[in-house]
Length: 405
Image 1 (cartoon, helix red, strand yellow):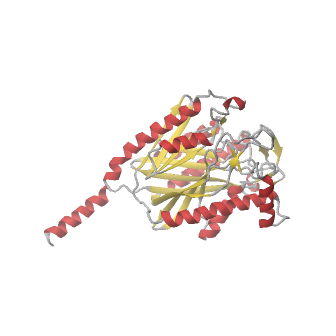
Image 2 (spheres, helix red, strand yellow):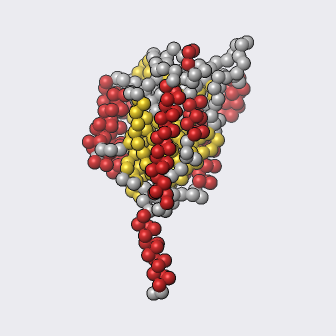
Image 3 (tube, one colour):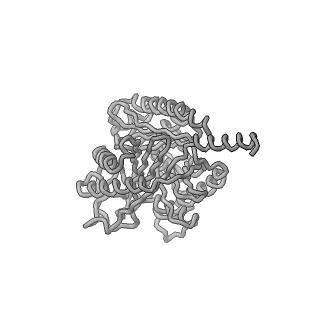
């Protein structure tokens, strides 16, 4: 064997040794009518609750575990209105006891702000949720295996500013809308094994319904799974959406006409809207998946951490050039844009209502008109600054990993 050939083989071996391939594990669980002794009540954002009349489709708990560089991050998405602080802590405490890999893990446990879910504050329901969540997380950790990721964002017009404006003094919305659908695709041997879908839209198409449902997320799951031809797990995240709604206000009549002509006049309005949103998300999924497949990474830089701002829990996770930044508020779109504009990563997934629920967080422009806000006006920018500081620190921490590849 020539000296040159030996040198090439040695270089290849060293390169392989230094590459820290990530491990990925998925698990999910469904809550349906069989889960409960009787139909639960459905809580609403206004503090009221209505009695459910039926289970229309299952509520999902989906877990994604990522391990790399001797660190572990666990995402858990829940089709709930929110995940209360005490439930989050219960889940994390039990999960850490279930596996040594989770003792120092970073958790992102989030809700979709689902207006047709079940009450997580009900003691019996909370016990079921905790037990199911812990098992799902433990299963995702047991399923950890070498994997790869691809990431990107596509366009889908899903949500609009939530403030009703049918009055003579309307001069414009106080905050912007966001129409990016963000995706993190996971692979094993070039086979799609799951996807994170992050949308700046609350699950409130059927907000007045008495049917328990995952809202439009159920339709999104069906559409994506039908397209890929496999029941892949889909982790659902709500980006900034405190000031957003899928129910448009300033051209409502035009939207109503669209849905009637597209899906038939006999299709219930909220169900037609759900199907419409699912088609838009699927279009973005297909388009984004096609070009992100050109760069599938099996050894991306990976790091994560949990940080505290006052008594609030935030988490940041980075995998390659994708970053996740969570907070416990329902936040206005402006705050998300501030984070994304200053983030050192190409694709920043902001996750609201994660690791507890701290209420709505409007921007400075509308703060005084939001009586439900329970924190100082400066809290929003404080969250932004702390998030950016964490992301920049994680960026520096993964640079040595990237240089080894």
